Amino acid sequence: MSVNGLPHPIRVLIADDHAIVREGLKQILATTEDIIVSGSAESAADAIKLVRSTPCHAMLLDISLPDRSGIELLKQIKKEYPKIAVLMLSMHREDQYAIRAIKAGASGYLNKQSAPTELVTAIRQVASGRKHISPALAEALANQIGNDNETPPHETLSDREYQTLIMIASGKSVGDIAEELSLSVKTVSMYRTRSLEKMKLKNNAELTHYAIKNQLVD
Image 1 (cartoon, rainbow, N blue to C red):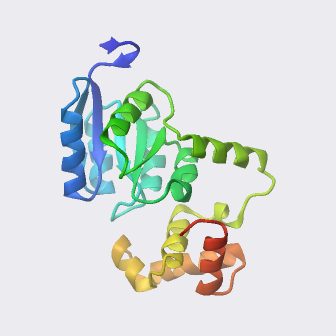
Image 2 (cartoon, rainbow, N blue to C red; image 1 turned 135 degrees about the horizontal axis):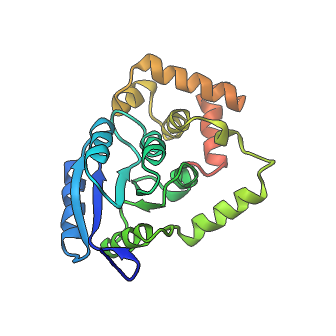
């Protein structure tokens, strides 16, 4: 059934590793008449199982899951279920991950500090087949299209390499990153090494300087 071009009800899945966030999202959406939360997951592994077993129109996907990058999971979901509209959720600033998420197939990007009304609006937008993009992000995407021949070095990194770059530039050690991402120190060190090689940088200090200069971190 559809109302004004929207499925009714809009069935939504939630994937976030924080129970408080999941419950908070459910409470916000419980106040609407046209949106139903059909299921939730706390890891990427659980999320892909949920998507495969539970029909939905849209998904709220945390960009930082413990067992896998949210953007990597996004790519898999869009490959298997291209019609599902995925709205990425993050505590990170929009300019850090939003362009990467949209290019990977996300229908929108929303900071977790956004107002509940914006969340509801965003879900309705993406469920109708539209994108939920802020004016600032739209401008950034337009600028990138105009500069395709001048791809900045950080855009050549894989999702995990980019995530490692941001976390190192934010002052976290390899050990801290390994613990936060549930990866081995050896694996994180490999991502760091690859990032330095691809960007032609020598050490963490140069990497941090690059990130600040390009406004990837505060």
